[in-house]
Structure formats: structure tokens, C-alpha cells
Length: 180
Image (cartoon, rainbow, N blue to C red; front, side, top):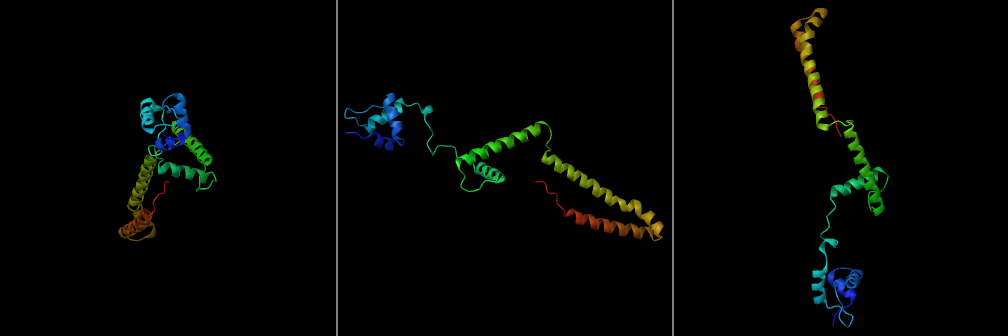
């Protein structure tokens, strides 16, 4: 004596509708008493089922990365949605918004409207370095002229100007550019 369609579906880990579909298509057969012999049906199922047509089980499905989930939540928050309890429609909407944003960025790259972050940081560093070098050399160029106008010792003026310029530059060195 065999088992019912529903029991065989539980046995295989599929729905009763899948079992009915398999019987209708001839992939598995019922016994004369309209029940299913699980051993015989399992062999038929394996032999007659195209693995490429099977849906992957929940364990085999590709996991959604936390980065993707975070991106969807960020997009929902940007659009005024809630961060918790995302519905399917909200996730689809967020996904479409994310695709649009990605495509906009790609278009800006193609049009050369975007600046590479590393080259921008290198350029800022180069500008700051040249500014610093100009300030470091400034006391040597101007101290003798200032000393003559003020009628003070040129060497003393140069040493004082250089000390104050270096102090000021060390204070400016603590400022870090924010490039977010």
C-alpha cells in the first residue's frame, strides 16, 4: 500500500501540485489502488526529471549579500521609506531606483563629468604641498625688505617670520580634507 499525493509531496519536499503535475506528465506513476509507492516513485522521479528545469531549494539559493540589503535600505531611506520591515514592492522600487542611480553614474563617467577620487586627492595634496612650499620660502624673500622698512635687524626679522610661518603651517597641517 502506498501513500497519498500530499504525503508523497512532503516526502519529496515539493508541493502536492508538483506531484499531480508529475503524475499527469507521466514522470511518476500511481499504483492500481491510486496511491503512490514512494520507493518506486522516487526512482521514477530521479530518472524522468530534468534537473535543469528544477527550482533550486531554499538551501541552494544564492544568498543576498548584506551589502545589497544595506543598499536597498539606504535607497528606501533616501526616498522617504522606512528602514525596517521592507515589503516586496518597496524592495522592487528600491532596486529600480538603485539601477537608475547606477546608470546615471555610468553616464556621468562616459561623459567625463566625474572625477576619480584618488586623482582628486593627489591633486589636492599637490596643491597643498606647493602652497606650503611657497609659505616656507616667503620669509627668506621678504624679511630683509621688511627689516629695512622697520629699521630692525634683518636676521632677527627673518628668524621671527620663519618661526611664526612654520607655527601657522603646523596648525594648518592638522586640518584634514573630507572627501566623502
